[in-house]
Image 1 (tube, protein in one colour):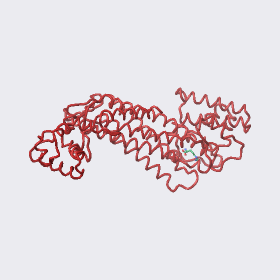
Image 2 (image 1 turned 120 degrees about the vertical axis):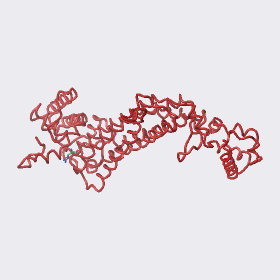
Image 3 (image 1 turned 90 degrees about the vertical axis):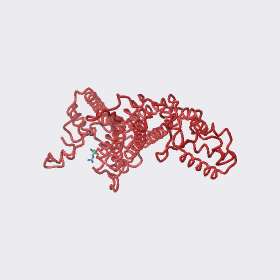
Image 4 (image 1 turned 60 degrees about the horizontal axis):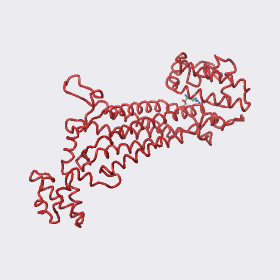
Length: 456
Ligand code: ARG
């Protein structure tokens, strides 16, 4: 039965009904919908808007529906949306009294409330998943004492400690976690009591429902509250940026595990093969995660487009929020979980990484810094080192194989200690500034990440 059928002479045509329905996807909101309805009915009873006995009967009926859906004994089907489903089911269970539930409420404030309750839990789940991922990365930071090449422009730039490398991703995901947590504050505002758009003439107590539902605040403008989906766009942005960071880690994983790089190894359990080329071990999982980032960005763009130019207040366009939200949620949570699992099995080829870290004149900055520390202006030190690099290229040498005489031929300020300054390890250890690559600085980085993570 439609909640609005009294107005119409003829029933809705089946194709229009199928196009209009949302139960097929908003049934995910059943727990939030029933929880909000229990709070609403309780408040109606306490405020004597409906008799308390009716409120109790409604509450009991709703609890039964919730339990049956959870147990799988009640199929959620055959209604326009989750709100209609629950109300119809309630009336069929407790009779006429069930029809009082929708007093002082509209589906407009109801759906906004449901989605906020759902989003709040979803954010908590996401924060826990991001935390797991950061912990997996921290384990790699702590255990991986190696050195790998650091790139800019995908050309070898300077050697990095593996700890500093993984700490970099921890920082990104920590920001994502903080962003979701901040988004939660704006999600955690209750629209219930706004009714259709103008508020309600019944003497409702919104702070009572707020307390019952654990919302941090109540909305201050009913027109805004029923049409506001900023929190969905914000959630999708938080999810998108997390996917951006995951996709970068994927890209590094794909490159670093390739034959050309050979720094890391994805275990067999998280790799796939080719149906035709027997030798292949493919990084399908990182590729899929990288690819799925597009879906999440798409949902963000979709939601912004739904909201753009939407006249006040509620419009059915807003029903489009849910599939975007749910798919982004599913995509992000599965990507976070699989990557946490993959990282926990990742192994390293320490020699290959170390060897590569020393290639490509990656300690040239250290040579220039050496001269600058002897009082030569950095720009001149840079030019002298550039000359040395050119010399090495011509002679087929590397900086760490140059003799003191060769150094001095370019600049007499070079002394014997330059030979120790140009090694890969010395280069890493020299970078002891806060956030730098040295073991000490990386250890501080780990401690700082752990400290900030503890809050969640
Ligand atoms: N399924 C609808 C949605 O998701 C529920 C709200 C319906 N409100 C209405 N005025 N038709 O937005």
